[in-house]
Amino acid sequence: MAIFRRPHAVDASSGGSRLDSAVDARAESREGDQPLLTRPADAKIDEREQRRERRLVEAACRGEESAVEALYRTHFDAVYRYVLLRLGSPSAAEDVTSQVFLGMIRGLGRYRDEGKPFLAWLYSMARKQVAFFQRTQSRTPTHWDLDAVTELAEQTAGPHATAAERETRAAIARALSSVPEGQREVILLRYVLSMSLADTAAVVGRSEGAVKQLQLRGLATLKALLQQADLHS
Image (cartoon, rainbow, N blue to C red):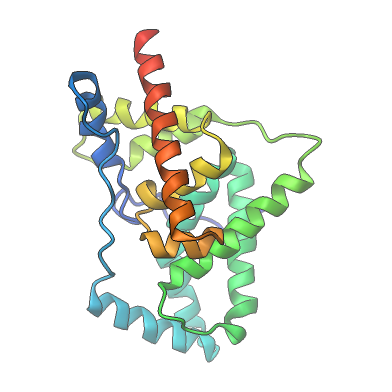
C-alpha cells in the first residue's frame, strides 16, 4: 500500500510533456515523411527555477520538513507518470512512487549536487524501484491497465485540447505498451518527460550514443505501431 499519496491530480503542464509534439506529428506522418515526434529541446531549466530548487534541496538536506514537502509536491506527478507508463498499473505506480520518495528522504543526507536536475536523481531511484518491482512480480505479471494509461495521456493534453488531440495521445499511450522496454524507457524520458540527452543517459546508465540509438529504434517502432493501428481503424 502506498505511503505517499498523490498530492493532487496530475498537472497537465508539469514535467514538460512532449506529447503535444506527437499530436501534429502523427497527422503529418500520414501525409509525408515528417518525423513521428518532434525532438525535445535540450534547454536547461530556467535559472531562477534552478536556484529555487537548489535552495530547496539544500534545506531538505539539512532536515527542513517544509523543504522536503515542497520537493515532494513539485516532483510527485512527474515521477508517478514515469512509473505508471513503465508499469501500466495505477496501484503499482502509487506503491513504487511511494518507495521512491521514501528513498529520497533516506538518501538526502548522502545527496551531492553534480550539476544535474534533482529530478534526474529521483528518476534514477524510480528506475531502480521499477526494476525491483518487476523482478518481484516476475511470476505474476502486473496487468497493464490501458484505460488508466490512456486517461493519463489524455490529461496531459491540457484543458483546451480537442477530442482529436486527446485521441492521438491515447493512441500513442496504447502503442507504447508494445514498444520494447529499453526503447520505451528512453522515449518516456526524452519525449514524455522532456529530459535532456545527457540526463537521460545518466538515468539509464548508458552512453549518449547508445541512448540516441535506442531513441531512433523506439521512434521507428512507435511509428510502425501507430501506422498499423490506423490501417485497422
